[in-house]
Image 1 (cartoon, rainbow, N blue to C red):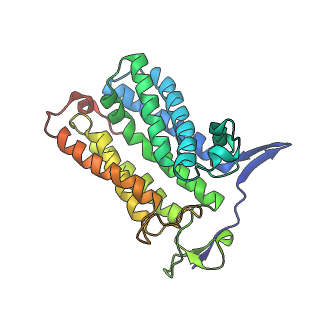
Image 2 (cartoon, one colour):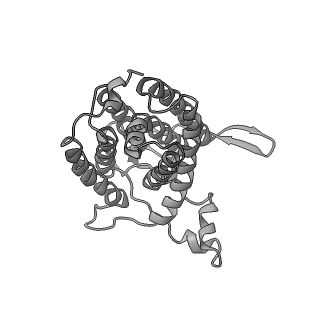
Length: 274
């Protein structure tokens, strides 16, 4: 059994300005994503290297805005009216309550990609395949940020690697955020990196991301503590994470079947090994 280390979530404080580790992890993910996508831009020829910076800006807005709205919508709908009953959508600005939702962030990224494609006249399916291999880096950084904050811990357990989180009581729990960092971050990155290094049908890479993330998140939800305000949705085991991840798996499998009914597309023919 381990005890959660006493980590200050504030990395740097200068007067009234506080820089949090969670924000730094987001910054690292965007910088790393820029580096990875710049290399893919040169190898695939989908876009000019100088357009990658613009793409990262679009994706960052999609992640932050979509993630926050998604959290309020899926996990804390009361925030829409608690903050201001006259202007309900202002509840998303109450950032001291709750956090971010991956599924909301995914929707935000899809919208951002569609806007980017409209601006630069790029096929959206090609862009999804282009971006997907870099996404696990952001997921890894986000989960490490959750660990530093001591949040999103797992359920009570007696496994040898269980960890006591002071905010959650004296019992050992699954360090579920580290499970997600390993599966959604490291393992999924390796799978997508390998998969995208060879010619694949159009939308196969992006679809594999849907399946991979959905499956890993669905599994981890069995040991992750449900959100206190929601609890179990049904059957004393189904969580909101389960409910949101299952459609990703089902839709992903259907799209993958459709993708492989078509010939291999040339986008990944030039795909490089980062």
